[in-house]
Length: 342
Image 1 (cartoon, helix red, strand yellow):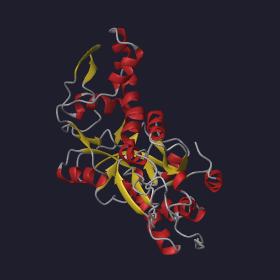
Image 2 (cartoon, helix red, strand yellow; image 1 turned 30 degrees about the vertical axis):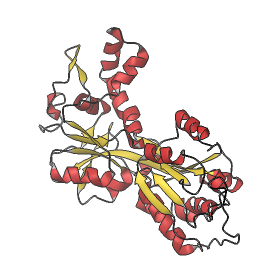
Image 3 (cartoon, rainbow, N blue to C red; image 1 turned 90 degrees about the vertical axis):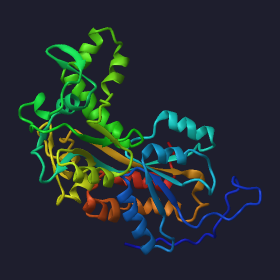
Image 4 (cartoon, helix red, strand yellow; image 1 turned 90 degrees about the horizontal axis):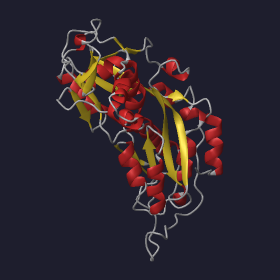
């Protein structure tokens, strides 16, 4: 891979100070714990193969990263936000209120959300969205009636599942993974079981029923994880009956500790995600503050490096870690070159 050289001198960000203090000499990144390992790989290789220092990459979750991103323009704010979901309209508005008006959206590839358990634990090998909903919802349909969830074992509602206590470790609400988990698993399960129809028949509006479908039980059988996947893994290690929600790449790098379940009869893999066959997959992103390009040394070069064929392509190090390469990578490369904003 060819090195990217910097010829321009370090500039100042005038928005920070009337005295025009000198800018940082490294790119600062924060956000999604799913994107974290990919960004960390790129940051290290970028530092090793260019004249720029390695970017500083932090985690914290998609929502937290985008909140920091939208705090304003200047060297005391981050340059890039990693996200396992698309930025929301409300976040774009918050950015604009703080002067972050030109945002470049970069899709780096795709990842799947998997349900994995302790390798020596119960045989959790096949799930449907309805199973996850029946296990985790605060209210479920039993004998045609919507009742407080009585289920304490997986076999209570599906005899094909293990006779094991329900205990699920799911992404906390600040994680982009949570949104995809809700949309593609919980909401689908709510419809499949008939619970959503029962809510509407009971007098709820469709919007209220959709919101109610996304709720999870609060009796300790569903546990929000605010940290990254290593925290979820630690909980699984300590709880043989536990089920955890992970990104595919994290699971693939921990197959000595975890086993994965199918969803709707499809095993998660880079192939089934790239074809769209696996139902719980999502694009991954990072967002660039255009106002920092040309001010923070190496920012544009980092973005170009990240999506280069040699890095984010099907034969690059990110694919080797588990990222499903974006078939439209060339368009993304051209967009970054042109600095096209949202």
